[in-house]
Amino acid sequence: MTADKHLTYISYLKVDELLQLQKPLSDGPEHDELLFITIHQVYELWFKQILHELEALQKALESADTHRSLSLLGRVRNIMKTCVSQLDILETMTPLQFNSFRDRLSSASGFQSAQFRELEAVLGRRDEAGSKADKSTGMGMSEHLTAGSKARERVEQAMKRRSVWHSALIYFNSRKPMPAAALEVDPALPWEPNKDVQEVLVELHKTDPESNMIGEALTDLDEGLQEWRYRHVKMVERTIGRKIGTGGSSGVGYLSSTLFNPTFPDLWAIRSQF
Image (tube, rainbow, N blue to C red; front, side, top):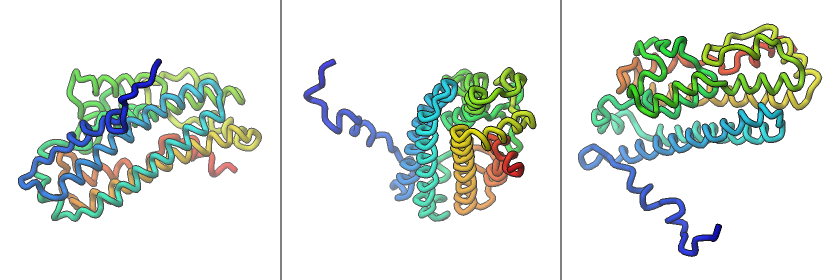
């Protein structure tokens, strides 16, 4: 494959096209709407990158490749730190500044971020029978997305296949046999914490340094997601208080209900057993 001699920084990164994607809707437009759009578009790019990394991570875990897995987990954790730090920028926008264009958002809502919903599913979130409703909207995680859309299909497919946790169990099983039942669970069903699995994890943490590093890196990933959720809740509360969200949710009420729900509960449960 020959190199394109006419390739430039701008053409390679599609900079001209990229800079045309920010389209404020408010009159003027309001100064802070550009910041709001830019931040959320950057989030979507990071979600795309995290999904790309997690796909590779699952392959590495299932291949029992410790070093590759640790490298990918470290990268995802650092991306999550960047996502959290972006909230510092968003919080420079005051409630009055946000309300100057909020009505233009109509029913648009972060609930409709297909990539974040897919990310949750890849990490292990499941809706029972594909339609478990959240408390504020009465809708499952994929039902905020247009029926029949490719975005919704991606989320629903992600809920049916092995999650990162299922791949981690395959990795741990390569180091020390896991309970057969844990390896044979239906990946479309929500994972239930398993004491037999936890017993093996404790033993691996004590006797297998590589498994210990993988377990701790997964815990870092889980903690990073919880940190992002917390900062997101506080940012929303700071900006709109307890108002109803633009997508019809209870806003802070719903977001608060997602806090302190670990993605990998077994890795947290074993902390008291050391």
